[in-house]
Image (tube, protein in one colour):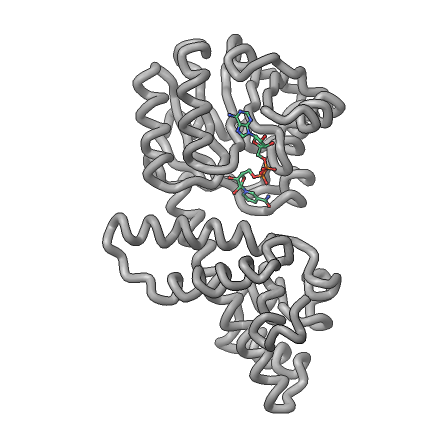
Length: 296
Ligand code: NAD
């Protein structure tokens, strides 16, 4: 049994904290929102009156917050209240620069630190099947792994500070761009009179295959579990895809990497979200590409 403090009990944090409780850990949690605290309490999380109180006896602190500025602000608030030598794991998806600053702040306060963003969404958080992409020292990773295994099924040590965030945004840049071109191919096939199933049968076993096509096909039919079969309800919301594509662009600009297709993908998802589709699954961009009349 490990004493864990969990800061940020939102859509992802709440089910992750619940899985830690189920695995037998003592979880003390905090969130700014009353409803989030009440819901987490119902799953066995002990709610603390502040982040500082939540971390007071913690051996491990997990943060699951919206963006870099929230993570840095939360760290500044609780780091000197946590026991020296505690392990601080940030599971939020944030910019690489802020992740490195969070490591530096934690290190200066005598903590072990790990950036460990996830993929798998709310479904994976609930089922305990998330993938964790970790950045930090071997010691921090070794200490974190058994705990992360209570919340996920793949735990990958990607390298030093910030490497988890780098892996996450590179992966999601591939995902965003391949989804768009997959949607373009289905929209083109329709105009050419080619059946969607026929395109799927060929491309999913040929050189056009990808996760976006084979496992998450953006048209109804070929992959029954994909969001296309349920009106493009997420899944993975377009607003979250846009967030990750913007993070990838920020990172690319900061190191001078050329990512022209990543930039195009970010622009297209920005238009899709601005048109009111931020809550749609990101594969719903196919309707946008077909023209506004078909938009979900
Ligand atoms: P969310 O908005 O549902 O939850 C974030 C929670 O943090 C909120 O409840 C908010 O009140 C709380 N919070 C903000 N500042 C705080 C502070 N200083 N102290 C305590 N609580 C604070 O977001 P989410 O969907 O749970 O996502 C969390 C992170 O996980 C994000 O970085 C997101 O990009 C990433 N992520 C989300 C998904 C997904 O499918 N939702 C998938 C992968 C990664």
